[in-house]
Length: 466
Ligand SMILES: Nc1ncnc2c1ncn2[C@@H]1O[C@H](COP(=O)(O)OP(=O)(O)OP(=O)(O)O)[C@@H](O)[C@H]1O
Ligand SMILES: [Mg+2]
Image 1 (cartoon, rainbow, N blue to C red):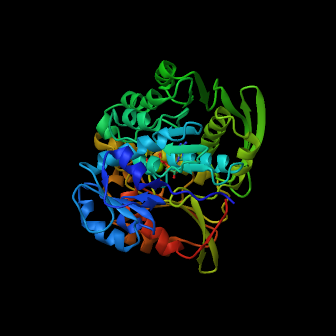
Image 2: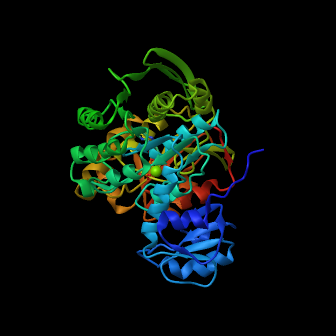
Image 3: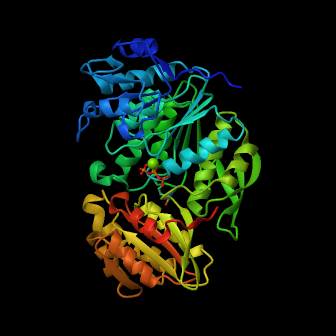
């Protein structure tokens, strides 16, 4: 049996943060959301923009937190620091320092970060169960990344961290904390273009991930972007080795990919000198691309490629990112693909393409909501979905949110369109529209709330494994 050691002792936290502990304690986890506290956790009272974390210290301790990091004394075991956010970052730095033997992998990109991070962790776990640490959810920003690092157990062999940004300079700061041996960019697409202004600026901001590479580290980047050369230049400034994945002249490429009956793909990939044939449980060309990136990263850290292939074949759908539900409808069943977690032009195109290749007996229905954070590009980006809707052979479209009107106009009556103001209204329309044998794609930015529609229509439904 593995020896159970605490994640942090109060003495270690004192020495990492320069704070003062009110008592001696040990913690088994770290969190800054009092609703997530489990017995034994360290609760960090962060200076929130909405509410000050100090308000929740009492409830965190009541829920079993072993101690809290605070900037003013509280009742109960705590560690007093000047700045709690800085203390969390200090803990993150100490966490990274204490695993000098671990291989650390950093993932960024405009789409597919969480999908790739989860697949990568699963691929490494296959041979190394219990010794792979990863960020949870999309904890990828200036608080999420330090939190994910601070949670890394001291016996970690592989650490996989997601890094995101909404502005230039953010990834540069995060990657210097993560100090990856392998830095991976999934794809470049117009997400957060509102803040960054241009696709070049987005690519450059993603390329910042290479700045934190450990000496001799590996940079992995997508071949299929007009900004590949910009990324290559950024990579070569910092990496010992640079590998491209995708199509054309990419170093790592799928020589052959066929869609399986159940939705996934059978892929033969050329990986530098070798060839590997594997299945991916998750459907879609974007998953072929993510899988190539995953295998490249697995190879770069010297882990087992065959085991990684097995993991990709087993990968379950991620909630809101492609999870497939069999929904009972009068007279039979329909398929509902839950992509409610996020949407931008690239992921909309990828998943519509996927819907188009879905074998269906009935009709193809798409419930599409607003893609947010597109600023001045919003109308053009929504209208730009029209060819993808048509190519996918969508028979019936339910549009949610005013921003989707340019799409309706661009379709010019070629597809049946119904409009809804919100997720609940869209659910009503969908329930009236759906028939046995139909396939339904549900996709929008998370804030549109289509997860509620999925819950309403598919709550309790069986989840298909592919
Ligand atoms: N390589 C890819 N190319 C295009 N679309 C993709 C790719 N991988 C995943 N997607 C699509 O993007 C959606 C979001 O995926 P994911 O959550 O992995 O992205 P993310 O980059 O982590 O997003 P966030 O910025 O919200 O953290 C998925 O549901 C899927 O539709
Ligand atoms: Mg994410």
